[in-house]
Image (spheres, rainbow, N blue to C red):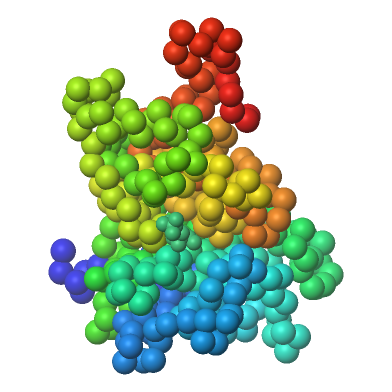
Amino acid sequence: MPLSQRSTLTQFLIEERRRHPDASGDFNALILDVALACKAIARSVAFGALGDMLGNHGGGDSVNVQGETQKKLDVVSNEMFLRANEWGGHLAGMASEEMDGPYHIPRQFPRGKYLLVFDPLDGSSNIDVNVSVGSIFSILRAPQAVVDSGRDVTEADFLQAGAQQVAAGYALYGPTTMLVLTVGTGVYGFTLDPSLGEFKLTHPHIQIPADTQEFAINASNSRFWEAPVKRYVDECLAGKAGPRGKDFNMRWIASMVAEAHRILMRGGVFMYPRDTKDPSKPGRLRLLYEANPIAMVVEQAGGRASTGRVPMLTVPPTGLHQRIGLVFGSRHEVERIERYHAEPVQVPDDTPLFAKRSLFRD
Ligand code: F6P
């Protein structure tokens, strides 16, 4: 289709709004502010070393609340999200991977009815090596009491299950910049036209194939995996001769947004499961601004997202920076992994004491 005939993100949002005549327009304006932040980040990412944007923030001494070294671009991207979204009057507050607590909308700006939660630059260890990174965002409704009183938001206001999300999406800063969005009516992909500075609808109604022969997991953690994950990966690795009867391919980019996008485009399964590497951490990825938004996008595209045990979108959050095991992608594979978690661990018959008993936590 000629570029001029493709609808822009703005046109898409306006047409969506026509289907909800009582909508105020706040939500559309918020999405456009998020998109603006993503465009600004895309520009900084694209300048790389030319924009003095590579390397660690504060000479490597700066760590975020997760204890991870902050990159210059982590900090810059966080600022871009805050500046693009604080002024419009659509938000009651924000929370981000890069900030310990909730961000209060400065008093000079009006406050609104939504909450924005984001990871401004996911996969940022890839920045210095010029590999794709992205931003992830989730939009929730602020509790009515917050909207009515205009009070500052607290951590508790953000602790809503993923199923409560109003919208979610990500921007991928790869060979092209893309914005992938769901407002709960399917998943739409927009490609940034750099000459116009506009996102154009290029991927309507994205659907994840239910079956796949591709999986993604950081295999260097295999000694820490729980038995159901080990079983699943072993069966994939066994290929045609194994119980799956087909060969599998493996990928690991270490940029979850990029893995999610690949899976949206051609299917696959991604696992960063709970493991025993650090018993104080129930997983690597964060529930509110990584797992939940990606889970909403994946499920809206006909895929499935899970902790391995329960659907991700049903998990009641307990903390802003809570970590969780995450499995998502092609529906039949994720269901299989969930089945393996639900089944008792099979121990060889010559160890009758443990046969059929699960040796693992629930
Ligand atoms: O913080 C999240 C993240 O960067 C993801 O984007 C990615 O999937 C993961 O961490 C990479 O983890 P690892 O360093 O174990 O490969």
